Structure formats: structure tokens, C-alpha cells
Length: 367
Ligand code: SF4
Image (cartoon, rainbow, N blue to C red; front, side, top):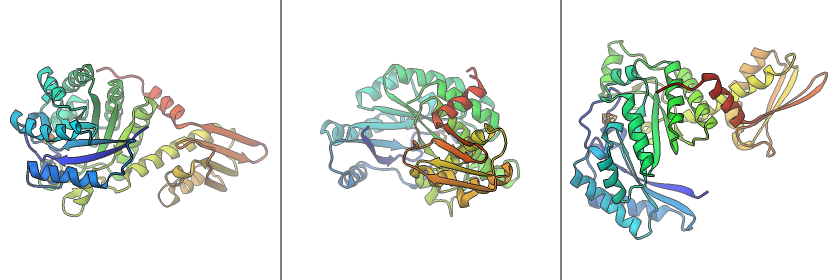
């Protein structure tokens, strides 16, 4: 598979008359000014100069932030024309935009298709109408289903973004949202935790005590469940956690909430914990000594932050000696258990099998 290289162009708050409760777009994009044509060319050239020269890489210009298809048509054309020229010259392979589900129509998709756009990302956030309303998204869940299907019919690649921890959201609703998103079969998804950004309505609610963000542990748990659901459905999850630009603002911009620079690793670690529990539960009695083997590149996630998985599992299962070791023969994300008490036992659990089992446990929610 070709490696992907993204050239991000931030289009902060342009075209968006909405004020979603969690959004301070100028801050999220890390910029407060709009981006002009020469600036964009400069950014593209700068990124292209840093990419490896091999032909076997996929290069994409991505317009992030704001709601791209809400920008006046002339401006959309100008922005896309710059990208289209790089694509026509063979310097990039694709063009990506992100927008709201209710800013999609056949006319808009026709236009984007003719401008060379290849990937459309929709900010879904939740597929629970109460959560959408409380978050002041200004659209309903049915808009997501309609837009996603239309985008599919036009053969764009489809990316969907979900958030955990919005006002009115619960564990069950987050799981149901992930299930419904998986049912739409996007090409990729992103999972974000809700954090309280300075200057947003959420910040006011937080300060008056009417909104409480998720704890880091709960946000990680919910993200881990969503990650498992997508993995079980074979859908790539290209981001779990905040955008790096949001992390840049951690000190001055994020006033509360489960922000963590290694959020994805924490979620992967939680999945490893669930999988190790599943393997230990298959043994007739808790073993005295047990060894888990994982791929070396998954070792840090499997061990957990400060070896939390070993510490917690040893105490919860009463295991005297527990080791988690790297082994090339185990696929990344899979876990092999080896216990050598009275009887030697070996068990193997693949992440995909486990993910499918978890997804099956939740059933398939209706739209
Ligand atoms: S639609 Fe997007 S850009 Fe507009 S306020 Fe909501 S999150 Fe921010």
C-alpha cells in the first residue's frame, strides 16, 4: 500500500454560520486569519519539498477546518483551482475537503467532482439526535445518512469523524454511534475526545457547572470501544485523539477535558487489557505464572502506561508472575498467552476476531 502524505491547508471558520458548542475554529486550526492564494501555494511547495522523492507515495492536498462547502462558491473555486493545478501537473494525487453533513447536495458533489476533489470528510460527531441538539450542531442524524450515501454514489472516498463525551452523550450512545458509522462503511474514520476550548459555549457551561467533561479513563474506554467496532468492521481509524494543532493549544486553549498527547496509545492499551482479560478468562483457574506475547511494535501499548496492564491484571487475577514480551511471530494487535503451571497452555487471540466479537455483542442499531 502506498504511504500517504498530506498537505494540510487550514480554512478557519470560513463559510460556517454555526456555533457548535465545542468549536472555536480559529483556535482549533491554529490560525486566526484566513489563508490567501499565495500563502496556500507557499504551504504546498514547502510540504512537497520535504516529501521523499519516490513515486510510490500518495500525496494529497487537504482543506481542513471550517465547512468547506459553505464557503461562497467563488472562493471554493479559487481554493480548489490551486489544488487542481498541482494535481493536473502530477505533483499531488488527490484533494480532500472536510464539511458538514447538511452542506452536501447533488449539485455540490457534482461541483466538487469537476474540481478534482477525491476525498470528503464529514464531521458527524454523534448519531444521537439529542446529543446533536445539545451540541447545537444544527442538523440531525438523518442528514449524515443522506450525505454519506450520496457521497458514496459519486465514488468519492468518504471519511467520518466522531466525538465522545459531547453534552448528553453516554457510553451506550457512543457505542451506537460507532456502530451506525461502521454501517455506513466509510473508507476511514477519526475519533476525537471532547475537550473544553476557551471561548466556546462549552467553556461557559463548564464554568457554570452544567457540563462535565469525560475523565481521561472514561474517554479512553469509549474511544477504545469505538476503535474495536471499526477494526471489527475492517474500517481504518486514521486518528484517535486531538489534532496536533489542538495539542499545540493545550496550554492556553484547552481548559478542561481528556486531552492527552498519546491518546491513541492509551486506547490501544485498553484494548490490549480487554484482550488479555479475555484470554485469562478462558483458563480454568487463574495461573501463577503467565506470559503474553505481542508484536514488538505493540509492546508499549500492551504494557500500558507505567506498566499499568501488568499491575492491574496481576492484582485482578491473582497472578504471581506476569510478563508481556515482544515477539516477531505474533501479528501486530494480536496476543498469545503462554502459561506453564500444572499444564502448559497456549492461547492466541487476534485483534480482528476480538473486535468482531465485541461488535457482535452490541448488535446492529437501527438508523
Ligand atoms: S460546523 Fe464545524 S466549523 Fe462550524 S461551528 Fe460547527 S464544528 Fe465549527
